[in-house]
Length: 161
Image (cartoon, rainbow, N blue to C red; front, side):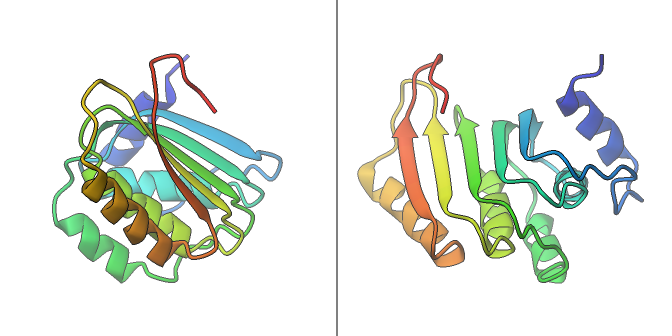
């Protein structure tokens, strides 16, 4: 079996993939593990997966790396309004260090998800962010996801929601 993170990397290598060739109308929950948000292509593949599941209600993902180039912001601006996730109600991100472009991904998904009611950021590891930084992250997410409850939680290695 091919892990989903390896599948995403494989699909991202094919720069021409704009839409996932498979459609799944019954999938309501998706967990993407160890995503490396380091290229526009990875974002494109992740958004394609989400778009191919019109009844998706819950998205959980863990971030392995999120040091994407500035091109990612340009990609999001170019694709504003081209995606819709009408049934997505919950987004949960788990990270160890550096959330960078993963936060941009949440903002983009949130701004295209009218039913989004919950965004949870789980911080693994022992180093906590300063409270001012956490406040800025939550404020930023509130602007793109105005009706969602935003939570930032320090989580141990066995903590799952």
